[in-house]
Amino acid sequence: MPVPSDLHPIVKQNADALKAAAANKGITVVITEGFRSFKEQDELYKQGRTKKGNIVTYARGGESYHNYGLAIDFALQKKDGSIIWDMEYDGNQNGKSDWLEVVEIAKTLGFEWGGDWKRFKDYPHLEMIPN
Image (cartoon, rainbow, N blue to C red; front, side):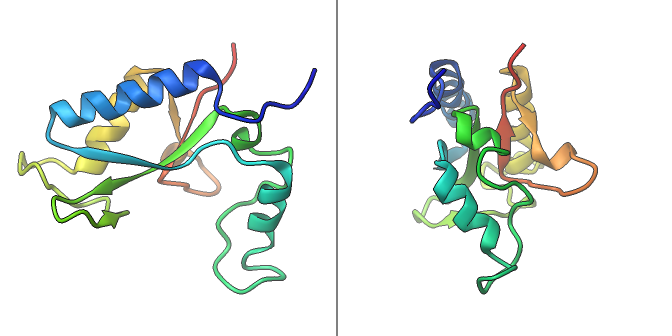
């Protein structure tokens, strides 16, 4: 079976549904990462190891759900257009974290959240596990 080169259609559909449902709550979601090739994954894996920067992944090429089109990363967009990764931001001013509102929506759509992981918390990460 060939390796995918884009997001799985169901993941894409649910990512679009996530953005729409969040928009209905006054939250703008930006998908910052989707499909990632094995080579791109290996380059990301080097970060914090053989390349400067913080470690952002423990998955090598072929070990990430991004490599199979089954994962996305997201951020929030403020009204001024800036992109943020702030889990406490409450841009819609309803007394709840916009980030956690997005996570709640994502879970209803079948995504698993990297923030629930025990070992390495990956807060922007959402993935769909094949049945």
